[in-house]
Structure formats: structure tokens, C-alpha cells
Image (cartoon, rainbow, N blue to C red):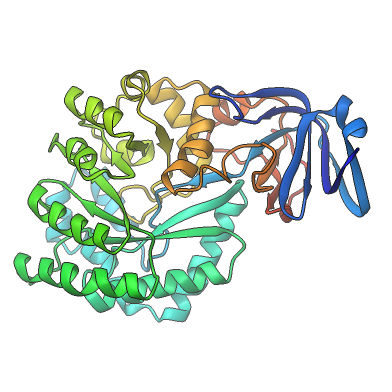
Length: 414
């Protein structure tokens, strides 16, 4: 008996399905969906014998193009106010992070700009930025707070993220970045008390976040401070994320493993002990190559060591106004291939399967497989490797979320 479908795509030169542990590459690929869920994936030659279109079904000829699952950007700070282009110019002229901060820059500059911007303007900005992600084939993303640095400031930003989430087709998973930086003119112990005793419980009570994140680093927050906040967040049901081992080896990966964290992110300075700890705990490594490049750190995270140890790996844009001021997914993918020596399919798997795992959506997102959400994109190239090698360029021609078309662009091949 044929499978009924209301959306059919056929004739694709390639599809990376990621149904298996590798790439699950299909040539002459096709897929079918019904009511927002994939009901069939296979070769175009087998489509008509297996699938029957419902009356009025949408049928798409993807000849000469490729299919990928919807991209999942699992680490992003894209809801913020202001601009820090001046800091970029200062860095180009040789200014250090501390010199920029002393001149009024850094995270505090974004906090001030975000606080000064009316909520409705931040929502509008967030929606425009969501559109930038959708246009590249991103169908799911994370959005962190962290630019409030006070109980009311963080809750305000999470509520704004909720408004953006409710007004866009992009699936957004909110994260409370409760320990991002110490507010100016604030006492550490008092700030920690407020985060633990008020911010975390109120964010949980309002259902404003699903995960809790903290920046473990010299000059940011210590192991004891992060542990205290993370335990409080776990007590109200939040999953734990950590910015870890980015600038120094602070044993952040080991702490992430000890806490049972969902992920440890950045990891440029991770040690061998940290890699083994993540592998034992099943904690994902989230890599952000654009931030590494922007910091001119000289050392990228050791992807191959992580992969060979069995650590699940995800890629992200880390879109934020300071250390990774770019939403360009294809810049991230190309840079990951060059800097981590990833194969293009590995980078794409990390941006789909890997990201879905970090956001707790591995059972429904990140793959082209029966029973998964009909989240996918069609790209105007016949070879998935072109997406990585022609880095920084967007080839998306059509983007679908839950079987609904969000984007249809003119077919331009580059």
C-alpha cells in the first residue's frame, strides 16, 4: 500500500540523510512528508512505487541540487542591542581585550546597549536576525541571554527571546546564560546569591529557559561559582551548558563531565584529561571556529582528538556582537573544515545531528529519516562538498520547517 504524502521532493543529485553513523549519502534522492513529518526517504526511482501524493500535494523537482536536514545552530547569542564594530577596529590596530574593556567595550558595552533599547525594537531585531538564519537553511537555533547581568535584566531578555520565538517559524531554544560576566560595580558574592536564589528560580517558574549556561574562565567565574549555580539550575530542571577551556585550560571540560552537562563549548585549550572526561560522561563538545579566528588565539579545538575519543561534536556560529560577530553558517562550515581538518560531511553532520543532540532534539531533528520532522533545505549545487569549499557563500534555494516552505529563492548557481 502506497504511503500518502502532502509534500514530495525528487530528483536531488545528493542527500546527506545522516541516518547512519556516517553521512548516509543518497544519490538521485527523494523524500516525502505528511503533516509536517517525513514519511519516506529514498531513491527517486523508487518514489512512485512507494508514495502516493494527496490531492493538492506540493511536488518539487530538485534536479541538480542537494538535500540536507535543517541546520541546528546550538550555540548563539543573537538577541542583543548595539554594535561593537569599533572594538573590531581597535583589535585590528593591536588593542588588547583589557584595553578595549577599559575604554568601555566588551560584554558590558552590549549590556548597556541592550538595556537601553526598547523591548519592541529588540524583538524586531531578533526577528530580522531569525530571518538571516532561515535564509541559510537553519531551521532550529538556540538563543542565550547573558546581556542583562542582573535578575531583572536577564528575565527581560529571556522574555524578549520568548516573543521572538512566538513570532517566527524558526524553532528557538532559550538558554539562561546566568554567569556571563560580573556586572560593573557589583560584589561577586552578592551577584552569585541573586543568580542562585532569585534569577534561576524565577526563570524556571516562568518557563523562560530550558538550559543554563556559565562562563568558566580566568577573569569570569571560578569552578566553585559555576558549580554552585549549575547545581541550583539542575535542581529546577535545567540542562547544563558550560563555556569551557576557551582561553585557558581551566579544567572546564572535567567540570562539565562531573556536572553531567549537556555540552562543553569552545574547548580550544582542552587537555587530554578533559577529552577523556567528556567521552566518559557522554557530554557533547560544541566548537565555535569563528570565535577562535576572531580571538586570534592561534589554537583551534582538537576536533580529531575529540572525535577519536568518542566525544559527540557539534558546530555552531556562536553569533554574538563581540567574539563571533557573524551569522554566516557557511563561514563556520568552511573554517571548520580548514582548521579542524573535518571532511565536509563531518562538518555538516556536526551542524545537524550534533546540534540536535545538544538541544535535546536528537529523536526528531538533524536527520532525513522516517518519523523525523520535515525540516530540510535544498541547495543549488550538485555536490555537498561545494558548500564547504565555496565557504562563506549561501546556496540555499528552498527551506522547509515542519513541511512548510519558509524560503524560496531564485535558483542561482555559483
